[in-house]
Amino acid sequence: MSKNQSANDRNYRNEIRELRTELKEIKDSINFFNKTFEDMKKEFVTAQEERDTMKKEDAELRLKCDESENMIRELHQRLVQCEQYSRRSNVEIRGLVETDGENVAGLVRKISDAVGEAVRCDEIEACHRVPPREAGKSTLVVQFKSRQKRDALLEMARKKRVKNSQAGIQSEEQIYLNDHLCPTLKRLFSLALARKREFKWRFVWTRNGKIFARKMESANLVRIEPENDLRKIV
Image (cartoon, rainbow, N blue to C red; front, side):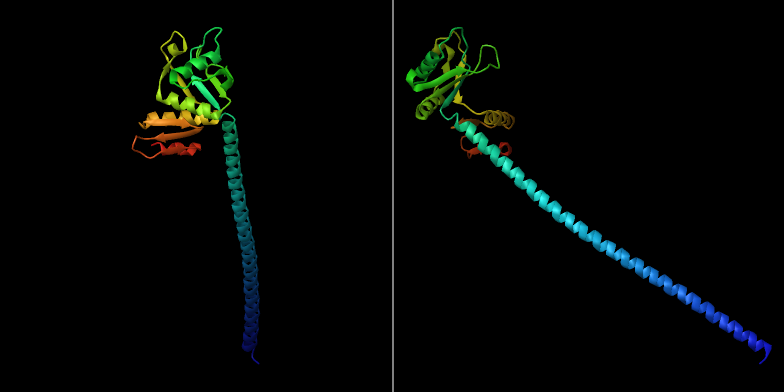
């Protein structure tokens, strides 16, 4: 065998070895990338499962929050109803000028005579002034033994205006007889009156502890119960 052929054979074998080495390196790289891809795929699946779990937990938490809010809203509404129920036989008299040594039961009798629904002292369970917002004009709260008597007095008071002078007080200022609302409903009524003025509605009133509104005489009656109902006055 010639020297040239031997040299060629060596070169050929060397090239084969180099090719095998390169092929092994390529195969190792492919295996590495395959393993990396599989690991990434597992991580992606795990992350997706965790995301789905978090979404499910988030939905459950939102549902529980909604249920809690509804329960709180319902409990608050029941509390307001109980507070108002305790006032079902009461009348709130505003605008009655306060005088020294006044006989509030006697004033109630004079006011009732003026509106045309006479009230006897034995029909009154209790009556007292509440702390005033304005000096000399504290509100008078009257509790009747009979709700029917209270309703009859308010019905007549809606038809006839009464002034302080008709109660024997030297003043021509008007006296107002209204439902005795609990603090929550009183605030809601005040907000309803503000909306009435803002949107030029004609009527906002209370009856039996409930708040109503009407845009005009021919319009539909609107009940204002939760605060969201104020948006109906537009």
